[in-house]
Structures are given as C-alpha cells and as structure tokens.
Amino acid sequence: MTTPAILPVILAGGSGERLWPLSRSAYPKQFLNILSAKISLFQSTLQRTANSELFLPPLIIAHKDHRFLVAEQMRHLDCNTGAILLETEAKNTAAAVALAAHWATQQYGEVILLILPADHYLPDFASFSNVIQKAAYIANKHHKLVTCGIKATRAETGYGYIKPGATLEQGFLVDKFIEKPESAVAVDLVQNNCLWNSGMFIFLNTDILSEFNKFCPEIAKHTKHALRDATKDFDFVRVNKNHYSNLPSISIDYAIMEHTNAAAVVPLDATWSDVGCWDAVWRHAKKDNDNNSVVGDVVVEGAKNCLIEARHRLIAAGDIENLAIVETSDAVLVAKRDNAQQLKQLVAKLKKRGNPVATLHRQVMRPWGYFDSLYKDGRCQVKILVLQLGKSISLQLHHQRSEHWVVVKGLARVTKGDENFILRENESTFIPIGMKHQLTNVGDIPLEVVEVQSGNYLGEDDIVRFEEEHAYA
Image (cartoon, rainbow, N blue to C red; front, top):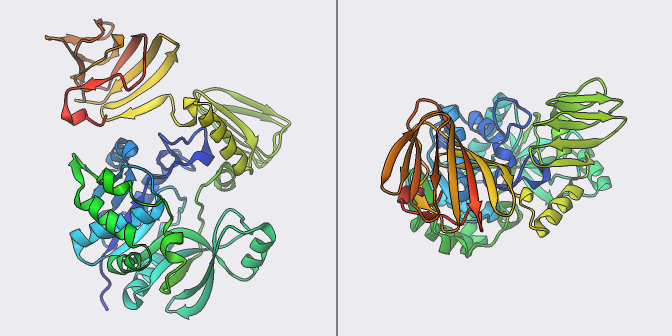
C-alpha cells in the first residue's frame, strides 16, 4: 500500500506565558532561541520537517499578530512553505486542525496531516522521522487518528498521559487518555508503561474531517467557511474573522481524541519537552558542577540547582537554591524554579494592573523591521527604528503627536508633506502634528533612526495610514 504524502502542519499560535518575562504574548516562546543559541523552537520544528522526500512544504497556522515573526524566521532558514494561515484570534488547537484539514483538501485532495506544536524541544530528528513514518502507515492503512506518545522518564504531573491498549502494527490502540495527574497517580502511570501525550498527531485529512463532522460539526462548518471567505495578504492567508469568532476555544484532545473510537498511539523513545515552564528549560539545559543553568553575564557563588539568564545586564547570585532568575531589558523574574502556577498568577496580576510588560517587549516587530522603546513618560517617547533593506514605514500621519527623526546609521528617504529628500547619518528632520510622512531605507545596510515623539497622546493607535500594503502593520 502506497502511503500518501505527509503534510506537516505547524501550530505556531501559542502565547507561552509560563516562560515570562522572556516569552510574552506579542513575542512568544516558539520564536525565541531557547535551548539553542542559534535557532528558535519554531525554526527547529521547521528543520525537523525539512526532508523533502518524506514531507511536503509545511502549512503554518499562526496568530495574525505574529505573521512577520513567522515570515522573518522562515526567511532566515530559506524555508519554503505551503501557506501561512492567520488566525484572527486564539481558538486553541481544534480550530487550527480543522482549518488545516480543509486547506489540505482544497490543495491535495487526500493527504496525511502531521500536526506539530511549534514550541517543542525534540533534538533527535532521526528517531522523529522514523516514528512519523510508522504512524503515517497506520493512519493510512487502518484509518486511525494516531498520536505520538513519548516514553515517560519520570512521574511528571504537568503532562497528560496515554494508556496503550491492544497492539496495532508497530503501535497500539489507545485504551485511555489521562489528564494531568496527581503525583501518586503519575508514579503509577509511569510504572505501568503509560506514555506522555506529546500533542503530535498523524491522520488523513479526510478521516479527521469525518470525526469533526461527527463530534464537532460547528467547528467543521465555521472553519470551512472561514477558509472559504479568507483574504490573501501578500504571503499570508487571513481566515474570515466573522466565521472564526463563532468557534469554541477547545483543544483537539477534548474535541476529538477523547471521544473517537479510532485513536491509536505510536511510542517515541527520545529526548522531548513541551518547554512549558522554566523548570523544563533548566532540565534540558547544560549545567555547571552545581547544577546551575547559566546564560549571559552571570556570576554565581554558592548557588545550586538554579536557572539564571541575563539578557542585558550582569546578574550576581549567591547562596541560593532552586530559583529561576531571568533578566530582560524591562523586567526581572525571581521565582521558585519549579512553580509554574505561581508565575502564571504573577503574569495575571500584571495584566490586571494594565502593565504592558505582561504582554509586550520593548522591541516590537513590524513588517519593515522593528522598533525599540527606550524611554516614555506622559508627553514624550523615544524609540529606535530599525528598517530592513528597501523597507518603508507606511505613509501616515498623527493627530496628537509630532516626531523628530535623527539618522544614526544608514541612508533614509523622507517624505514629509509634499517634500521628498535624503537624510544621511547625523542628519535630522521634524514632523509636525497632522503632516503626512514616510521613512524608507534606501541604503545598503539596515537603517537606524532615533525617533522622539512629543504630544498629548503617544499610543500606537494614533496612526492614520494611507497605503493598503501597511493596513495591518
């Protein structure tokens, strides 16, 4: 029997709040270099599916706010893609899987879907590929919804478990899914050879759509319509907001896998983590002789079993144990390393206070590059704008603020009202309130500009744009 092609579907819409302050909803963990100094978890997932003889170009499903992070990180890998579907709001994994199944039906007819979270750590590519081929064979031959079960190495209470049933080829039927257990129950599950539920799934698109129609017909209907009425936005496909807003927020596990009679599992014996908290990062990171994981400019004396990350400044730590200390440009976390629930509550408090550091970094990605907010008070804000080669900010105006631009590196073309002129390094211009303006990098290096804003209101929503290309910037 010939196995159909395998389409990787990379789910990149998570928020990763349990790795705050490094991971925030505007720049979540899947796009960060965690457990690798060179590539992000998302890029590692792309590399895992780069075997063109085994996999089709991947389908990426991401939140609309992360579209430029996705595109930029794929560009750095020179990675081809089947498409990038943009969700208008987070709806958990069931909606994303249904979207992928409908898209695959339109593009390929019948194909095997490989559902992969974008934020997992799985460095053994060979074992991964081997298991996926076994799972794809079972999915195709027996029309099963196959999940990848990780061989449990400890009694972990933060993971769900799968109890294998009768043997099926090189896998098993699923006897039962067990939600995150209490500690004593977890010990018993590991002793009885239960597997961790990895959140990776393999099935035919036709089979999963059949199960959606059976158990969640509203998800099947609204995702089909959301894709039917989607709009093309350069390299992205924006699903229809009105249809997508009608969807429930539910995982594929709750929606389908715990109800279907077609669930199967193939074991994977390899290093794996969902990198769901700082304790998980510490567990897989390199450590010193005192079991400390240290990143950046860090000095320790008497510290044991700690995770310490310095991204911008020196951290000096002495006579401490079992802590996570994480420093970014605008926040510092000090917490028990293994208490993810405590961190979740801290982030919730920050959100309740309306503190932007709960969700935003100082550096914010834009289609033209990024800006870094250096200073802000009631009537003044200072930013560094970095424009990539050939890129422009939108032609725009502001009703409540003026701006000064000072070029510190590169060559800029400025549109200001009816004027067009060039600014070189150490040259500047002033943009009055209400004047149309635009900035373009016309040099051969990234353009860096200091922007000083002054006015009664400095919010990002005080922008009137005049170009369709930047309507969503």
